[in-house]
Length: 119
Image (tube, rainbow, N blue to C red; front, side):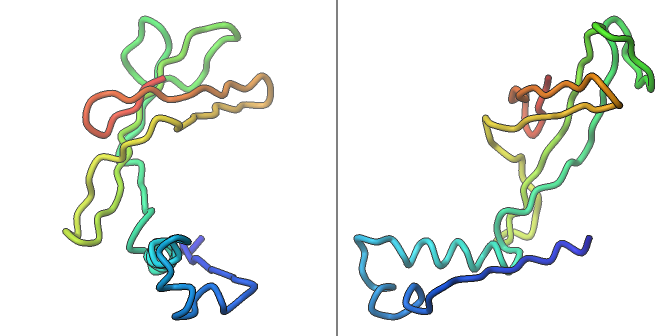
């Protein structure tokens, strides 16, 4: 993967000065946000660190038993193009999915301190 992004529109009218200047449609904000996303100036996130372990164990394991409780933690950051730095990513709808053959687990991550999310 090379992190390439593409943006396709069915109409150039969306980018026209006529529609761009109409505040009731919000096209100016939408176009600016879309262009920032395409040019990698917005919407870039990374996982700074990630760990998981079983209940009662504080180190990373590779094998888990069915029904065993797992704890997952990840530090997720978002790129800020204006300051050319990474800041904590803030969201309340992140999910993690753990898969190894069958069964699988999908759960919502809970916001911790700074850029940390827990499950």
